[in-house]
Every structure is written in C-alpha cells, then in structure tokens.
Image (cartoon, rainbow, N blue to C red; front, side):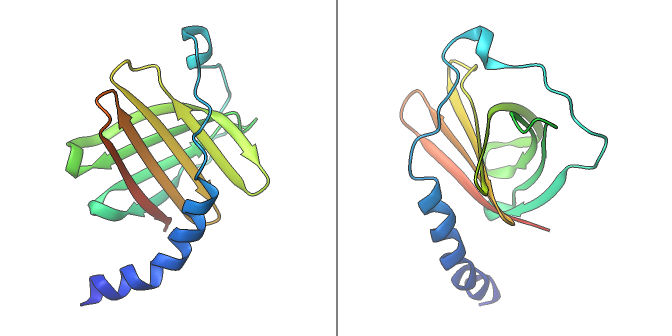
Length: 134
C-alpha cells in the first residue's frame, strides 16, 4: 500500500518530466564525438533513488556538456556501472546521451529533483528507471 501511495504521488511529477523528454535525444554520430574531454569539479555526485530499486549517482562536468552516471540497476544486473554521456542543458532541463556501444544507446535526463535513465537496445527493447534526488 505504501509503495502504491508513493507511486500515485509521484505520477504527476513523472508525467511532467516525461513530457519534457518526449523528443529523442541527440546522440553522438561518430566515434570522435562519443566522449569528450570535460573537467569535473570535486563536489560529490548527486544521489538518486529510482524505480525497480535502482540507485544512480550523477555528476555534470563543469561546462555542463557531459554527465558521468554511476548506476546500480538490479533488473539489468548492473552494479555501479559507469556511463559517460554527452549533451547539455537547455533552460532547466539537462539531457545527455551515449551511443558508443553498438548494442545499446543510453540517455540521462534531469529536471529539478527528477531524473530518467533510459536505454534502447538494437533489437528495439527499451528500459528506463524514473528517479528522484535524495
């Protein structure tokens, strides 16, 4: 019952965040664009608690052109998997993507205290976790 109550209270916020992420992220198109050199400050990454018992630690580069995500996602057997994504900030929304792996593309979107980590495999399978900053 408590889990359902939490889900019901989070749905409006997730709908708003999802509406901001309805367009597909722009992903790097060549290997030279897949990972850039970006400096990170020494501050701790932000901690997110997500659906499916996932945990995300996310940190943006100083120039906001890159994000480093460390994800523990039990449903896909990830334990502190690190992914570096390229993108940027527009207004109050940050969107980052990485398609350097030929099998799967990753996207990380942040707005306020909410985040979404999404994956799409070459066979068309999609998976995402919805997150909230803790």
